[in-house]
Image (cartoon, rainbow, N blue to C red; front, side):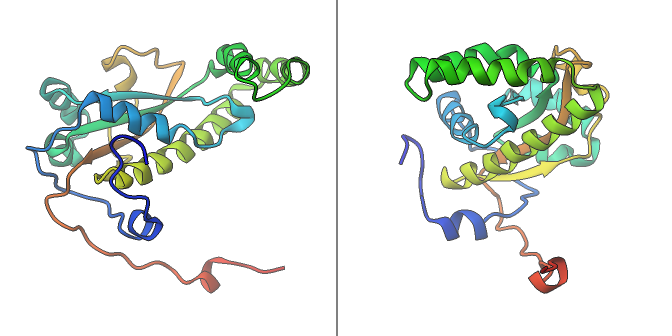
Length: 212
């Protein structure tokens, strides 16, 4: 396990997860541990490994107060949490293609000729991709990292809640981001639960699955 992980128990991580409404406000997460949590979460898959997710970690009281005004229906969750992770998707993610693939060559993950072949094949397509298509692609990728982040938090002994109800048209600019470049995906509160949360019913597989 990594430095701060508490468990690798799959059942505890997956089936123990709850969407927590109230946190113990006395529990803080160090920036060192939060960095580890984010690093583990970003092992999630993404289209052509462009990793378009971007995070704003809001862990100061001032930052959470500001966010509370943007998430009025979820203000108590925001204020009692150790931190809130605002997840965005970067429309200009292709700008990092050379770094991502170049580092893969440097680390011995792929031969240089494969890197050149792949960049030459997909980079022009990505650069010319219509805005609608790019948005759809990076929103999917950011959703994958968000779910993984919540599971990683469980492995570290913390609880989370994904939030979609907030002022998405304002949040990028409030935290100094270009709203045309960074697409808001969700907020994820993280901290130590003040209660166990509620179990929820899941539809049976036969209801949600078709076999062909």
